[in-house]
Amino acid sequence: MKNNTLLDIQPEVKAALDAGRAVVALESTIISHGMPYPQNIQMAKKVESIIRSAGAVPATVAIMDGKIKIGLSDQELEVFASSKNVAKVSRRDFPGIIARKQLGATTVATTMYAAHLAGIKVFVTGGIGGVHRGYEETIDVSADLEELAQTDVVVVCAGAKAILDLPRTMEYLETKGVPVIGYKTDVLPAFFSAKSDIHLVERADTPEEIARIIVAKAQLEMSGGLLVANPIPEEYSLDHEFIDQVIEQAVKAAQEQGVSGKNITPFLLSEITKRTEGKSLAANLELVYNNALVGAQIASALAAELEQQ
Image 1 (spheres, rainbow, N blue to C red):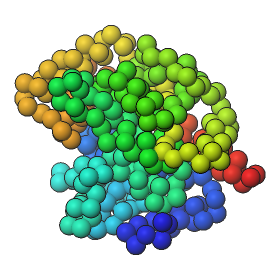
Image 2: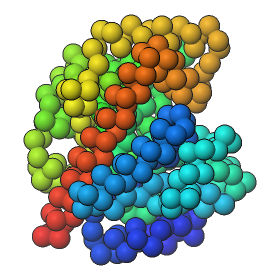
Image 3: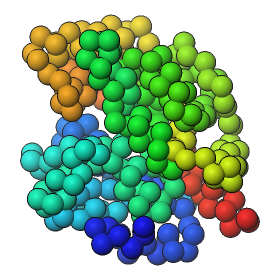
């Protein structure tokens, strides 16, 4: 799998993987579609810096020139942050974007898949996709959930995006047998908010404990991913009732304007940023930075645990 000719692994990332050192995968959709320019490029560079400071190697994943790039240069990061023609690539889109050599930004699902191809075990994102509100009418479920059900990568996030139906998303993950571990929390974080009303079955309070759970899962030969739910720091957490009201307004706006499919998440996040006067964007940045730190710590702990095996 690591010799796949479609993979273009940055030398620093390849050296770290070959040596069994900690590597953290990062998605590129958050750069191209998740935040406005120039906040997105500033965020991307800071995330990579945080990961390095915690002893791991960052590997931002994207599609360029018919290849899956595992690790981007500063110049390539700038391209993804500033270009207007970047395709948002989920699993179904992967073959076409590769074949046509289009510029493509990877979602959670495709970043997981690419990380697995490259042999990267830990992936950091803001929040995963899930079951959308109004599911009974649209049957709209993110491909992220199915990827978690089948692809063996650890995903560190601040829960599912708050724009989603969180109880149904958790039910889906439970049905698919995906372990969800609260990092220093007994409840599911709700992206912009540190807490929700959803209680978690599993909790871990150190990166080393999570590393041991990851190793045990591998020894059990269990397929599929593992989700680490890492709350946004309390000082940046938005009031749950306030943000929920804003989300309801944004969802209504999307329905009125006929926005659907892969365009729905970027639209809602943009609307929420406007309606919160930028507070949601500030919270989004802080939760991503926090996830980067925790993800790097978990990747380092996992590398040390595997070295002892």
